[in-house]
Structures are given as C-alpha cells and as structure tokens.
Image 1 (cartoon, helix red, strand yellow):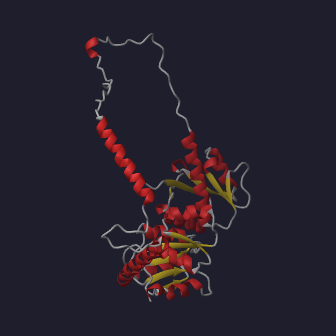
Image 2 (cartoon, rainbow, N blue to C red):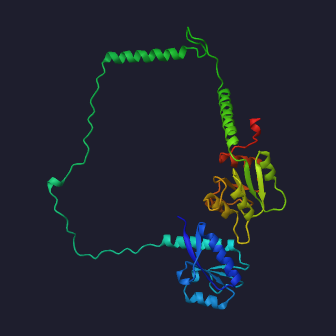
Image 3 (tube, rainbow, N blue to C red):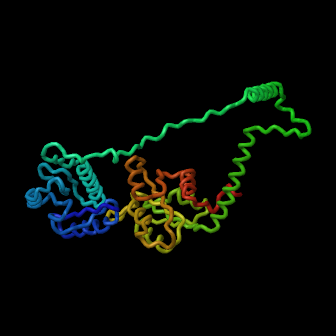
Length: 347
C-alpha cells in the first residue's frame, strides 16, 4: 500500500499556495503520496514561507521545526530542510521524500520499553505425573543383514574384469558387427546447428507476434531538434508519435493503441509533473489508455544508482541512457516481448 503523508502550508502568496495545492493534489497517487491538510496540528510535514518572520515564529511555537521544509532566501536559525525560491514542485516533493525516509528510519530504530514483572516469589509449577511423560525418541534403526554367497561374488568379479578388458582393447571408431558405422559429429557443429534452429523458431514466433501487435510507439522528447531514436524506431517498422509535452503525450495515450512508450524522464510541465510521474500513472492505469498498458522505457542523461531506483519505483520496463543506441532500443523491446514489425533478420 502506498504511504500517504499529510502536508500543511504556512504562509505564501495566493498564487504560490495555488501552485503548491495543485502539486500535492497531483502527488496523491505517487509513492510516497502527499495530501494537503488545513491545520498544522493535523499535518505530518509543513511547508513554510521562510521570507515571512511570523511564519518561522509560528512553527517554532508548535515545536515542529524538524518536520518543516522552509522555502525562501534565508532559513531561520536551526532549520533542517531549506530550499531557495523560485518554487519548484518537483524539488519540494523530492525533499519531502527525504524527510519521509528519515522519519521511517527513526520509527524503525525506535525500541519499545520492556517492562519486567515484579518478583513475587518462586514460580508455582504444576505437578507432573509419570503418566504425563511421553517418549518422543525415535526407535533405533536395526538394519537386517543381507547374505551374499561367495560364488555370487566370484561371478560379479569375473563380469567386472571382462568389461574392463573389453573397454581397454576395443576400437572407439569401429562399429560392432552387423551394425552400420555412424559418422562422427563435431560438438561445435552440433551446437551451431542447435543455435540456428532456435533462432529460426524465435523469428517465426516474432513474425506471428508482429502481425497482431500494435505498430504505434510514443516518443516524448521535449528537445526542439529531431532525435535519432525516432528515425531508429521508424526503421524498425513502427509508426512513431513524437511529442514535446506531457499534455500531448497523454492525448496520444488516450487515442492511440501503443506497443511501447519512450519517455524522457526529465520532461516536465509547469507543475513539475515529469516523465517519471507519467510512467507511474501509465503502469497503474491512472491515465486514460486506448488499449492495454504499453511497455514504458524511460530515457535519461544521468545514469546513476539513484536514477535507476527512481525508475524502478515508477514501474518502467527499461531505463535507457541518452543517446539511445540501436542495440539498446532493440534489446529493450525484445525484453518486453515486442516484435519488430520490420525486423531485418526475417528478410
């Protein structure tokens, strides 16, 4: 179940409050999720305007300094979390994520107080009778001896000696009388033939899958210049729908059955809603889809452990590092069992 934290706003102008309210409304479905509440007493965390002196004093009076994220030019003395203006919803959510993780660690490390009972004397034990004792020790296994006559032992020794002598003097390349001589098969040739047969079977299956699967893919790329990935996907036989905004991507998802969606993880709208959030909503069917949930490949220029963790939490099928190569795109599609409509290997 997704963790949801309550957040209260303290201070800010009307415009800034509207922006943050929209931000938290969109963040209810993320992991972790955040929902806005009206009063500080009901909130797990507080987002406060550090540029107003009365705000800091109010937070300090409520003894909630450690649960407060201050936004402004100069944080009050002793502030734990602080962000500079302008207000960036994505940065605010990620800072709240760190505060939520810190709170979870603090709760896990807490040790409950152990209260020992008062010593009221020696314990009173019930009386034990001999009839109450049950022997649970398993009986000792007594194997029965097997008698083998000496004559049988001599016969077995004779058979073993004859087999050893026959193996030492036989010619490995000579076939027994009355049977045709089989040609020797090189291990490498057999292995190569097995690989070719397996490859032919995969291509036949891929051809059948490509005939039934959608040929449309979504490419969310906010850069103004054309990217090589779009041309690469077209060479694979896909119909590429390249868009530059989150809103346009959601429109394509609603109207067009897609085989896959390639999303720039850093693409975002004015509210900070980015490619990671869109991936999460697609995989959880929180946005209208024209057909089944497509495979989602996230693209990023920052290949780091933290980025891979965020992509995994968003539910993506593959994380690709920009610029995406032909091999990376083909392997990502193949791992999702998406056949290439114009696979050159089937020619």
